[in-house]
Image 1 (cartoon, protein in one colour):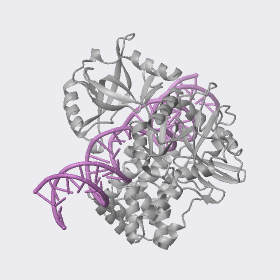
Image 2: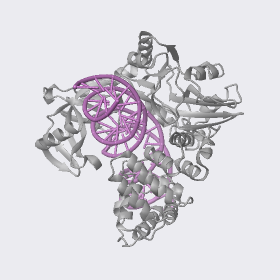
Image 3: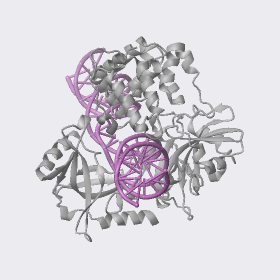
Image 4: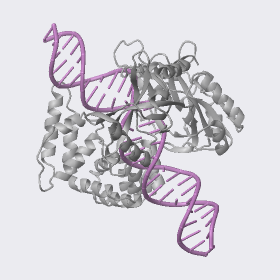
Length: 511
DNA sequence: GTTCTCCACCTCC
DNA sequence: ATCGGACACATTCGG
DNA sequence: CCGAATGTGTCCGATGGAGGTGGAGAAC
C-alpha cells in the first residue's frame, strides 16, 4: 500500500466529526491494505510507531528541510524501513545520521505525506481518532465483534497484532488472546469521585483500600521466576530485583498480582513520590539505592495456578487470592457498604500520609485497560488563590487562545512573586476566551510564545500537593494544578503567599 | 582526548 | 496525571 | 407513541513536574 493512502485517510478522518464515520473511513483503508502492511498501518493511524520512540523530536523535525515530490511513490514498507533504520542508529554521530535518513525520507514524500510524517514523529497527530476508534474500525473492516477486538487489545497491549488476527482469523482468532503468565495485560484504571460516601452510595458493597502514591506494578510469578511490568507494560524486572524477590515468598506456583510499589520511610510513612521514582530505573551497576527500599502492596489478582480470575467479581477474586499472599504484601483494605466507615478509613489513610483511597464495587469484574466507574479514587485537594504571572499561547485546538497559565505567589523575603508551576486544566471555552482578552490587556512584554503580564489577576487553583522543585525559585512546585475559577473579587495583595504553600508542604511531611 | 554541562527524549505520576 | 468538549447510546420527559 | 431533553460511558486532546538516560558540544 502507498504511504499516501494512509496520509490521505488521516487528513480525511481529521476533518470528519462523526466518530462512526471516522471509523468507517479507517476501516476502508484496513480492508484495502495487504496483511503484511497491516500492523504498520494500524500503528501509524493510531499515532504511534512500531519502533516506539526513535530519537526524533521537535528540534530534529524542524531542522530537517527537504523539497516535496509531486507524485506519491513511497510504500508503507519503505517508510517502515527508514524509521527502523533511524531507530537502530545509535552511538557517536547518531544524531546527524538519523537526521540524514529522515531528510532522505522526507525528500521522497509528497507535501501531504511530509505533514503526516511530521505529525506522527512529533507525536502530534491530531485526527480525533486513536486506539479507541481503531478498535471500531477493525471490527467494521473485518466484520468481527468490537468487544472481542477491545478485549484482545487490552489483554495483549498490541492493537496491530490484534488487527492481523482479526483479518486472518476473525472472531475465533481474537478469542485466542488470553491472559498468559509473563504476558502482561493493561491494568484496570479508576475514575475520580468526590468523597468516599458518594462512592459507596453509587457502588454499594465495596472494597475500600489505601491509595498509595507510588507506581503501578503487575507482577507475574511462575515456579520461582518473577517478572514485573509497569502500567504501560514496560518490563522492569531488572530494575526491581528486591521487589521481585519479595514476591517469591508467595507460596503458590503461579500467580499474577496487581500491585503498587512505594518507598516507605523508617517510620513506615510513605516518602514523596519522587523518592519512589528515584529508586526505579537505576541502571548504574553498583547503585546502592536502585530498586531498594521499595515496598510492594498487592491489591488484586488476575490469575492463580491455571485459573484466570479477571472475569470473576472482585469479592470472589479476593476470597481466592487473599489467603495465598502474605498479609504484609497486601494493601490495607476494608470491605463495607457503610459510608461512615468508609469515610473514617479514608481519613485514617490520609492521616497516615497516603494519597487517599480507592473504592471498588464488590461485584465488578476486572476490566483490563478500562477506566470504569466500578473503581473510584478519592484524594483530598488543596486550594489556593494565586497570581497569574504570564500566559502561553495554546496550540492545536487552543491555537489563537492564551492557554497555559504561569502561577505565582508573593515571596516577602525577596519582595517579588515566585513561580510555582503552570496549568492549562479546568478552563472552559468561555474562560479561555475571557482570559485571552484579559491577559492581553495586562501584557507587559513577550518572550517567544510566552506573554508576560502585570501580576494582578488572581485565580483560584486546586492541586494535589506540593513537591520540592529544582526548577522554580521558591523550591516548591504544585502537583496537578488546575483552575477552579477566577477571583475577580480579589487583588494580588489578597492572594496567598509562598509561606502558605510551604506550610502545606510541611504539613504533608509530618501528617 | 577526557570531562563536564546542557538538551532532547522518555516515563512515572 | 487532570480536565473539558464531543459523540453515541440509553433513559426519561413533554405532549 | 414519538421526538426532545437529559444522563452516562468513552474517547480524545492539551498540556503539568520530577528524574533518569544518552548524545552533542564546550571546556579543559
